[in-house]
Length: 74
Image: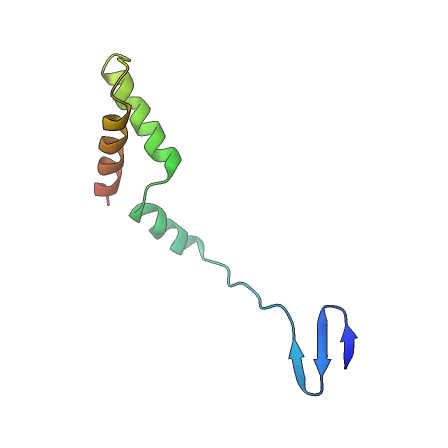
């Protein structure tokens, strides 16, 4: 058995770390449309808070509404 760099060679078999397949930007764009990110929901939730006149006590409702709006956009 020989060791060359990160590969271990045993006869004809070679063991090496498997490469991770990179996602395309097109696939990432589709994913972002399907599920809004935490930051997108937070931003929309804050906008709803400001629209109400910055009244406290509705954070959960704002978050749920923001998430529902963003999910339905696609």
